[in-house]
Image (spheres, rainbow, N blue to C red):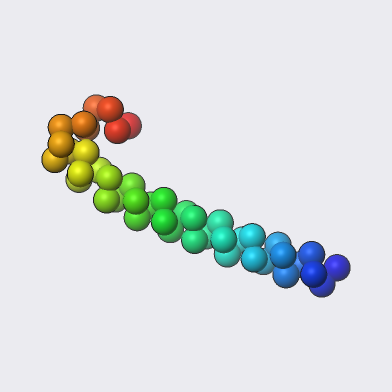
Length: 43
């Protein structure tokens, strides 16, 4: 049970990291897309 619980905690923190990375990536990609003229294609 304890192992399962720690595994769940690990997965939750991993998901948080992925969310942070994705939002950071989205913030980077939007200005780049606008700069290159891909604004319509990005969304």
